[in-house]
Picture 1: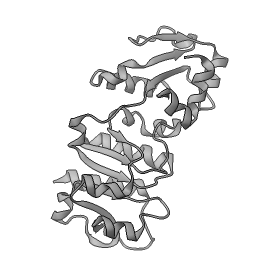
Picture 2: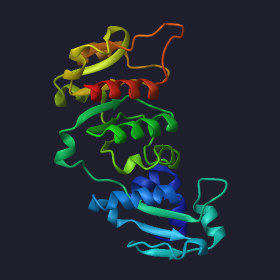
Picture 3: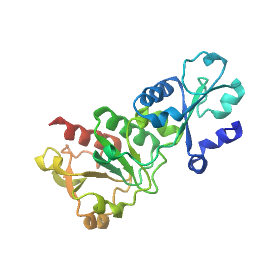
Length: 241
């Protein structure tokens, strides 16, 4: 790709148009290389480096560019000098469709989404579904916050909330009035639904979905937990026993 096209990958519409996204920094590139050993899809990446990384060992095609050009590609104030251009994932493999689904409704914060992806990758056995109106998971801020977990977690985007009953017979969500998270029945669901950071999930939609409510018991000194924290605790509970 031409450098001018690469710079456009900072915008979602061009990521979708070109079918690629940017992976910046040594740690993330190493994670992408590690994922490529298991998943052939990631082997289609290309590497752009400055002179400082000219000797970086890689099986991907490598392009040496100037510091000024790297600064134009970078999403950080102090570019490390190494960026991979990776292909957007295609439809999830059949094996991924058998994994427990975590559905995020209109999640907005890149840091929250990145942290959630790290949790799902750490525990394994989960895939992440995102509703329309959610932050783009291939936004550089999300990719960076995920610390490479985005390469290891199956993702589906633009999944309408109302389609969940067609795919999942048993749906759970968190609510202060629900059963304790430690209830045995919490483990019996196919999809775990989490709402927008500020608005949650519309009550009418929850009724139509036939979703079952659970809660994380606390002292109730504050109104709610951070979204990523709630997902972390729910996933830990699912894996605990």
